[in-house]
Length: 374
Ligand code: NDP
Ligand code: MG
Image (cartoon, rainbow, N blue to C red; front, top):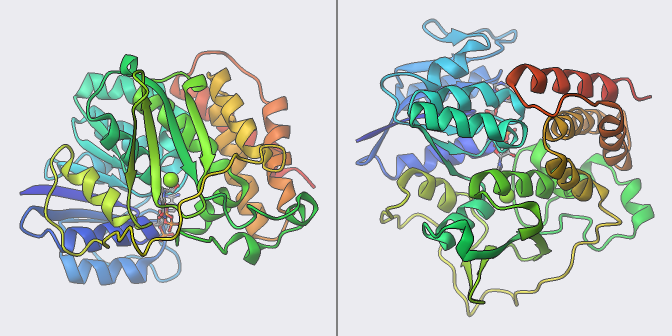
């Protein structure tokens, strides 16, 4: 029996993870759950699962139940418990970073949905894993696909990774219309149902930039061997081209249940009759097209930040987090998100090194730049 902590259990990935674990009760038990402020759903989950640990980072007016741990330390405490083998990190944003690092340091498997961790602190995560013996297995569908296609091959066997992107709701929109897109336009994702931050990231393609950086750190490939292609049906989850010209892809209907389950079981597979089946005959035709990089500048800005390294990915991520939150509050237009990222990347500079302190300082400075944009 492997014991699981789900950080961000009240979110889209967190709730899906509980559904997956519920179908595998013979193999996995739930030891810990955490939320940010959704005390009502957290209480429902506690009543259904009776985990040993329940954490609520920011209890609002409803407060927390007796026995719950509250405050920022709840994530790290959940992630490092002795009765936890696997930490599903489904927190959104850099808020999930310390829990990932602490879990790796404590020798846990981290089933990582919280891609912001790797973008901001890819090197620190690698160091924490080698010191503590922990490992990251990606939940992100593209990276799960690549992991499965790689099947433990060395980077030298790989010519390039091809990450697929749905293209988001504005794939075919003209540039002027995209610049003025509304909140509800951006939240209408064509193929995936997800939390609001990643849904907006999918509309700007900032999500693909985060994923390119995530892939760089997970699989150890340089940026010029990681490409992005638009695939509107979201059925081919990504591809690996090997040096002999062979290309492997992983397919399936768009559902996060499969990559979440695989992150728990890797490198094994378990029987799960509950995951949605793929029927090639009834599937839509699979199409691929280039990214309109001029219309979605956030992708290029993010990949460039990845190439620069040091604090640049942390600046990109923090600027994007604040810009998306401001867009969702109606304070800046959709086109303002990429503009804010660009502003932060051109103003926040710092040392090439990437220790935790420099990264968090860069994160703070980028947040300030973007929150002051009028
Ligand atoms: P949601 O917004 O649906 O859920 C976020 C979860 O994190 C909630 O449980 C929320 O708690 C909690 N949370 C939010 N802020 C904090 C904080 N500051 N401290 C502690 N906990 C916090 O997001 P998603 O589930 O969509 O995404 C989670 C992560 O997974 C993101 O990094 C995203 O990029 C990644 N991902 C998501 C996919 C998807 O299909 N949704 C696919 C691939 C990756 P509360 O409910 O109390 O607010
Ligand atoms: Mg993804």
